[in-house]
Image (cartoon, rainbow, N blue to C red; front, side, top):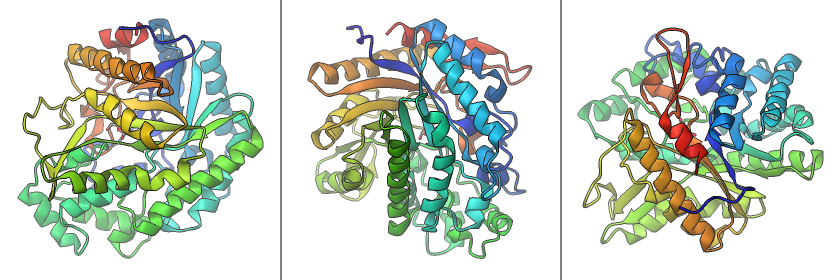
Amino acid sequence: MEQFPKTFLKGAATAAHQVEGGNIHSDYWMQEHLPHSSFAEPSGAADDHYHRYKEDMQLLRDAGANAYRFSMEWARIEPEKGCFDENEIAHYLQMIRDCRMLGLEPVVTLMHFTSPAWLIKEGGWENPKVVEYFADYVRHVAAILRHNVRYVCTINEANMRLQLLELMKNYRLGSSADAAVKTTQAGAPGKESQVQVGLNLNSNLVLGMKEAAEAFGIRDPRKIATFVSPATPDGDRIVMEAHRAAVQILKETDPEIQAGLTLSLHDIQACPGGEQEAARQWDEEFTHYLPWIAGDDFLGVQNYTRKCVHAGGVCEPDHPREKTQMGYEIYPEALEHVIRKVAEDFKGTILVTENGIATDRDEQRCDFIRSAAEGVQNCMLDGIPVKGYFYWSLLDNFEWQKGFSMTFGLIAVDREHDLTRHPKPSLQVLGEL
Ligand code: BGC
């Protein structure tokens, strides 16, 4: 394998809620603690990255990486509408400084799925006012990003809400909440593997949704608009408007900041007869966003596997490979395919902001990383401007509804005892790429 150029950003990614712990003002925290929560377990202290981030960054740096992608937590910074916590803003400034001091380029995400609980009570990501709310939050943190951070991802997987809509359609949900339970209990195995968030459509889904609606003061459970709930077409547009507002603020604050969003992208492969459906799905996942992102400084590409489709939707591939803990096919070539497809239409810089595998066999992770990185290099050799690769994730962490059972990390965390970090050989593999 070739070496990556020195300027190439090579690192790993995390998201605040999944690693920090104690994110008590967030919508997720609230949902995790409902009596019939769809979460396997609450996030609790997570990896206590909030206090141990330096140690984690140091391990990443020592292995040979030069960049770290992490997120700032809106729910910490604005726990109540309009009340900004200066101590939390100072915490993230310190984190950015420490990151740089250790020799890692910080790549900061402003919104990685979690929102302040108050925002959901106000109609969440379907309320057009979220654009102004998000802009207000961005205005408050922009000052610490100025001159300190070069790469800012505004919104993580801005297309996740549409992907969830697709998933729900697969389950034939939407018309009645009762149908949700029947369909889920009936099985539809593996369907949840088509989105990249650990969904847990358990048999208590309806009760959990009802409780969440009560907790957020919303009458109809189907109207709960967290960031990880199915979008209406308006909701999809609202996310893009929030992104544009954020980019404008960032650019006004510091024109040197490189701003973009990230998208969850599958390597969509058409089985015979599935060409039209594959094109439709790619348009929904990627192409229809082009007018909103074409002028951005970069696009964050996030890929975990491929998706085979026939005329009726998702289908099993002809020669399926082994699956990860998440139920995704182990298919590292997907990353190269996705980058090539993206580059046909998006002409700016590409950062691979997430790519990873949930497995308890670290040698599988080592192979996955080598193979995915080779795909990135092939793209670069063909002149595609890929400027970075971030493995998901630096640490074993809280995989949303699936709790801590999914092990994506380059570093294991001893959750039984004292959260001691245990680097895995794959950390070194990444560092030596
Ligand atoms: C998300 C992460 C998640 C990962 C693995 C991505 O969709 O950005 O938060 O943990 O996939 O499922």
